[in-house]
Image 1 (cartoon, protein in one colour):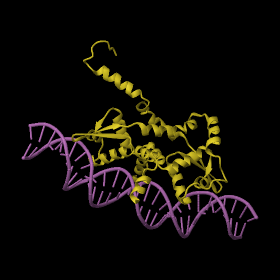
Image 2: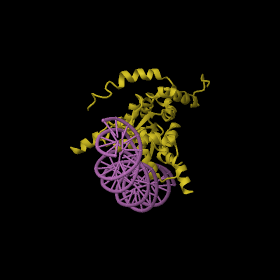
Image 3: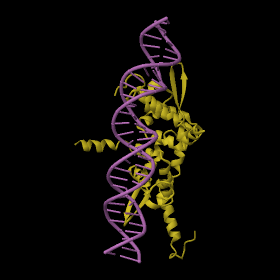
Image 4: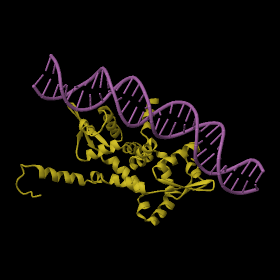
Length: 125
Length: 125
DNA sequence: TCAATATTCAACCAATGGGTTGACTCTTGG
DNA sequence: CCAAGAGTCAACCCATTGGTTGAATATTGA
């Protein structure tokens, strides 16, 4: 039953895997390549100055993050972009959007003005 | 002079550091806490079942990714959210937005034009 | 002045990551 | 049938990570 525990605990937060996958420039370039359409493992690995085995590990990391799906056809493996986890990550970051769109400062100013008890004249909010 | 090389090369892509920082649930929760306003190191560390030193390391990781700025005031260190790198990450992910919004025609046009001028012969770099 | 507070630092540890190489499996085409 | 092709697997290496503990550094308040 330890095996089950292990399997369950291993799956913690999908965002962990997604952000971890995105933290490597090789893997980001692979995703970008896949944005142009499906690619075999070999062609995905081509642009990189590393062994095929190393590239294969990167692809597996992308699969673990569910960013890539693989279809085995004969002796070639075809990889496709799986966008859902990217959407999750994008959505997670979207929470912080107000911090860089400048709306925050406006909000802060409003809150500060509202908070100050010395101003007791014309501000109703 | 090797030191300089090291320092320069170490700074590779800011997105590496940002996504790596975001790949840890502790650090994501810290950011979320900071979204509610500035926090001292101690208060940031409080919710976590780990030593203060460990939490301090996490905060340092956030600083290295420029996601957090620290102001030392007396003996307390005050941390603030620094949203710019989150915006970069959000923008990077935005490139893939069309994959999950179902608008694939624009995608094809972009990729044919921008990304792959050389698919299978001219690319040796 | 002195003890408590806030935090970092250094050393250490186990686990993970990213890379290598060489052997292995499976498919395919001649 | 058999060699070349596409990929994985396993073992290994070394650097990094995430955590620990104990000591060190400032700062503060009494």
